[in-house]
Image (tube, rainbow, N blue to C red):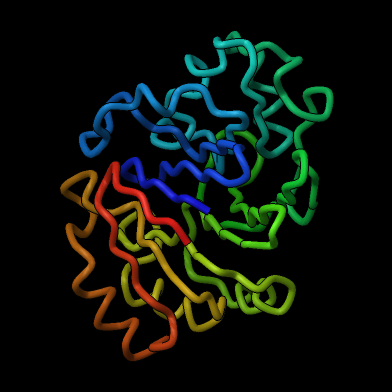
Length: 228
């Protein structure tokens, strides 16, 4: 699995020749560099419809081949923005929290996330590739105790967690989340993009040592990749 952070909450997951783009916020993202290599994914996953997450989805979907998956209410809304319904998975119906679907040989589970949104509910995603390598993208969320249930159901290799505070978990709560999730690795996100968010991983790293020392922190920079 190759994981590329594109700033804020935007990631590309690449495995077995499949490109999955999550929350593609490019335009207006001061941390996002050249995105020309990231505008033809096989699948876009969106956690919720705020502009810094839905982002450039509509313009990317105009390529006519990328598939889209999100909570059902957002999938119903997207055609009004000009997206071809045929590119929205499951006949334009998407999925909902608690569901697990297949995308080729990949398994995608939608998880709860506690945050606001315009259409439907906020969500996270657990993506499992054909080898069983498992990535959890938490979306914009507060800390919640049922993250421990995710660890019971899934062996999470990498957790992508917000640490910025103000709109989401901060470093302390994200470290506590790691203890619930029992993830092998964590890549922080949703920080440094704007002045009101925390600007580095220092505090998170300190709390991680205290609350979940077995979880390895991978503080990659925007437009950097890690292969695991």
